[in-house]
Length: 195
Image (cartoon, rainbow, N blue to C red; front, side, top):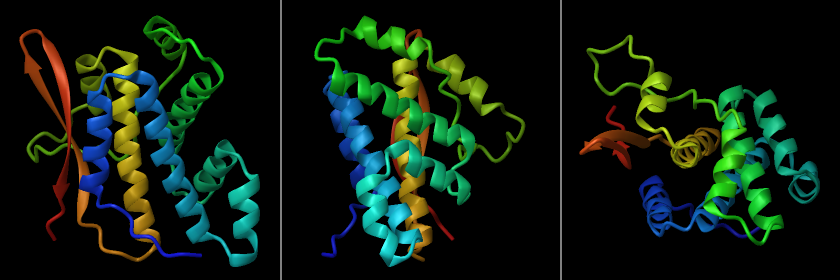
């Protein structure tokens, strides 16, 4: 198997932000699914023995790989739910040629997106904040909730792979909410971990 160098987390998040800024929902979802599936595959393959790698890589579905990662305690239920939602929407994009933004919104409204487990508060003086409540109050649109949650989860998967590979964790995805007039916007960036 050839050795390839993983992009930095900053490069990865900058790439996803750039794709999302094109305002093409189909392309954004497909790109996020591609990144998520890459890291799910890498984590599973790094965690199993050689004889099973080909079988797992070529014959297990994405949901089956997610169950493996959940059983390995790499994912919790809410993070798995974000990835399952992303996969479901991605399947719609692949199998339905014509999907309007309204069609996408209807599909997302019916889904329980959940909230990613590894979100932390940057403000050290505020320990009792309900991050899920803040997130849902500031990001009303389900599509944007999915994009933000998926990018954060991809960052989590990226770091999980580094842990499995026994590499130093030096970056994490940071979400900042900025109010512009009466509307909130989420800014996704990468921060350094200082030890």
